[in-house]
Length: 264
Image (tube, rainbow, N blue to C red):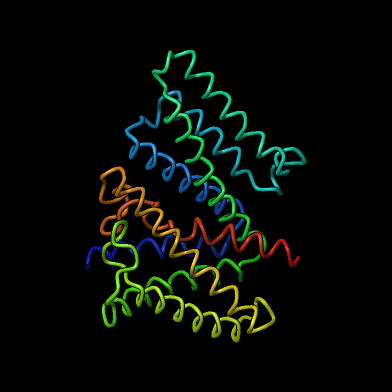
C-alpha cells in the first residue's frame, strides 16, 4: 500500500501540471501512454510489440491519435480514421495469406481490436482536454470518486458479488457506493466550476460515466483473467501497467466526448 501511495503521488505530481498546461506536451504524453498501452495488450497476447504486426498496429494507433487541430482536413475527419482502421485490417488479413497462417486470423483481429480500444480511448483523452480543461477534470473526479467509493463501500457493506468470474473482489454494494460517490463529487464540482450549467445534467452525466467507468474496469479485468496475468504491466510500482490505471478512462472519455459534441 505504501508503494502504491508513493507511486500515485509521484505520478500525479508529474501528470497534473501537463494536464493543466495542455497543448503539445499533453499530446506527447497521450502518445506515450497509448503506445505503452498497446504494447501491454500485445504482450498479454504473447505477440512481440516490435514485430511487423506490432509496428503496423502502432502506426495505425499514432494516426488515430492525431488531434483534429493538428491533422488538417484529412486526418481530422472520422472517415479518415475509419480508413486507417480499414487499411490496418486489410493489411493484416493479407498478412495471414502471405505468411501462410503464421499470422493467424485471431492475431490479426486482436491487433485491430486492440488499436480500436486503445486508440479511440486515448484520442478522446486528448479531445476532451481540447474541448475544455474543466470537462477533463470533471471526468477525473468522477472516476476517482467511483473508485474510492466502490472500494470503501465494498469493504464496509459488500455482500453480493458483482461478477465473481471476472473480478472476485467487486461487489454490488461497492458498485452502488461508487456511483453514489461520483454523484456527490459531481454535484460539488458543478457548484464550484459549473461545467454543465445544470445540477441535473452534471448528475446525469456522472451516473452514466460512473457506470461505464466500472464497466471499463471489468473489461480490463476480463482481459487479464483470460490471458492469465495479474497486471497489464509493471511500469507503475504498486499499480501495475498503464491499462490498469487508465482502463476506466478509456471507456469514460469517449462517452463524455460524444455527449459534449452533441450539445456543442
